[in-house]
Length: 416
Length: 98
Image (tube, each protein chain N blue to C red):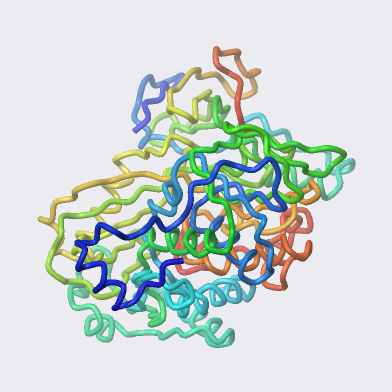
């Protein structure tokens, strides 16, 4: 693996950056692997990396129907935080956040991880009560959280309109200073590079068209590049979990929806944190290029079309202009949609499936990016040992039969 | 934005409607259903990549519920039919989902 440092940068500058080697191989698939991971997004690549790095399992293929990091990893709004209400969620997301804090060094890759703070706004009395409860719950789980007054919100983020006469008055906020952003593509690239260096085969343009099951046990996958046998298979596909599960003959408590985002023209630095508003449903941060990166809520109808309705964007932009009046004349440059798999309790499914040796990590809904390292870490543990880690055991598929849901709808600092 | 033909009010934009999720999910008999049966009824969904039978309500019009067949690949509305009626046959009705 190329070791990146100030010296390698200087050395390559002398050759006009034309001699950087490729950072991962593009091998043809072997006939069989110990583990096949379906989906080379952040979660799938992290799974492969931790299988190799923590569990010594390197006979691993990651199959990707397009290009790596080209799905939701490349489409999300890159918010990272762990201020979830329930114990199970706080433990999982906080584990991920701790991994984020050392990840660039571990992978020797600049993830542009920036702990700039995530500010959740409070607009009414109910928000205030819910936010107070959540901050207290976060403290009990050793997750950093602060409750801010209106004045403190204004001091922390001056571009917010905190006048009491606005349509969405700001009664305060919660702040997680350790939250922030990372460069989404770099996360996929960093994990891909580190996994490849440990012997993992990343096979792009290789769509899975079938999952082979014999006697209730998975034996391999059918792909557009032929059949690949595998002792263990993991479905890590963000927007198509139900389609893959159907190939293996079971159903999931998941519906797929478009989730839209958009970016503005580049501005000078005006916003140094992430703003999230549960009540009006808009999220915004500013990228290092200067673009405002804006996300919204789901389009209600199920769809795999990667397109949403303009009215969803209209709603979110109307709210954003009320909150931050200076954006009223900012031009928006691009909007796009990704398909997110949503569970009824807005928590993911990570663990075993009804098919033996077939594992799943999906149903992350609108918030999978933040948990990329933690999700890969616990799924790798589950695959390697055959049993879930205590962190992901509560997120098993059987919670929908037992009724032990982890209901983060509205509890997790956003409305899903 | 979708355009949906309300059977009573005619073609109206999606913003007038409320989406009601998958159609034709029958409530099981409580006396004869175990936990797995309830989980299937309450939580499991077909979520097909293809034709989806779903419920809509004309919230800002007649406020009546009805069913729609819609492609989840390109969002084309393929059929509109009353609640309680069987699912109509449409071409391309084979779905990839579960």
